[in-house]
Length: 468
Ligand SMILES: Cc1ncc(COP(=O)(O)O)c(C=O)c1O
Image 1 (cartoon, rainbow, N blue to C red):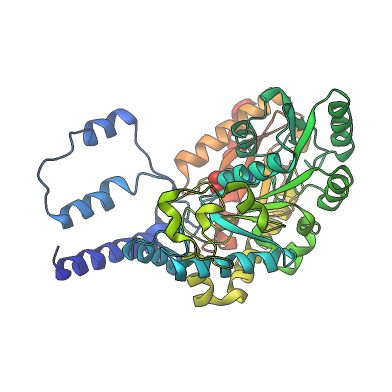
Image 2 (image 1 turned 120 degrees about the horizontal axis):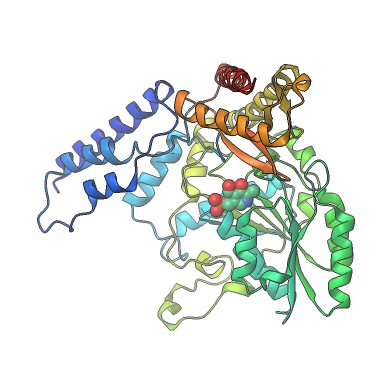
């Protein structure tokens, strides 16, 4: 390609993305298509001859990319939404354009140093000791897996090892435990209390029973923000327990970890700095494009001890002490330069802006909680700690049975999906169907939340009338 064409294409691509994001508020927060339709459109042989690049780019922009959840939409409240910063998006483009492979110091000294800087920032925000370190990963799933590899090694590779987590923990942790070889029957789902936090006494009982039966604890996985309700496990109590029992404590802070940059969040997550490892996702509440996960371990040497494997072909990449080869600290050899997006975003906007943006999510969730509590048709199903609001249609005086309530709330969810711009999802809270808003995009204003709640109330009232 000529430089002129490359620039034309890059300009066009940038224009399309900027226009797309500018237009988002007027669009629905979701679009999608059935497989059959898409298969007919796209399932063709790889073309022998190419076609004009501009045409390909336009097709991607108009026919492929819009068919997705618009997770940066101001009314994207489903699952864990995300609204990346523009410098973060450009960082991914530049890292790809400069073709960085952040595997080793030799292949990427500048990028490796920036990864060290970003990890150091996370370390300070978490209040972790100087000895801590880590690396960036694809996301919370990879970080959990890498953490459990460390935990298994620390536990001495027991034949019959067990991993403990609350019944609210993310499936990523169960999967990670399975991958490191924990037998499914030794993955202990410990009951949670009325606030959806792990019951530490039940955990202690489970560990005692296991030890008596010759089953060795490998790790306890704590939640710093469950996906369902945002619940934070009692991190101090878990740290006390794990220290006393010499069990690796991993904190899954994939969703909630970013709040440590705020004063309130730091208080909420007190005790996280005592964990052996912490997983934290910058592509969630830290406004970065996918993929940007992070793993921090209390003892930086742990990861290298576990993951470093000598390979003759890579012998030239050894620079010696202080020059980490990140490929020796985790799963991946070839690695994209993820740290650049975090670094560029923070350099551009400054930490004060990030702090405000994270706080805003918590504030809006607090306002939404109040709205739900004051509503005559809505019922709050879980206290709001971070930015998740779980609630349902359930007017107190109506005294409806659970089956009908579930039917009404499922209908409201479907109507919000089809008849409203917002994208909301649901969860099950001990088998009770719950509507769920996760409010964390920097693009979201109170009006977006209020109007969405208003629409939900209206749909709810209409569904209630159908029952009469
Ligand atoms: C609490 C929690 N842990 C782990 C994960 C998995 O993270 P990822 O999707 O980045 O792999 C998620 C994803 O939503 C999450 O919310």
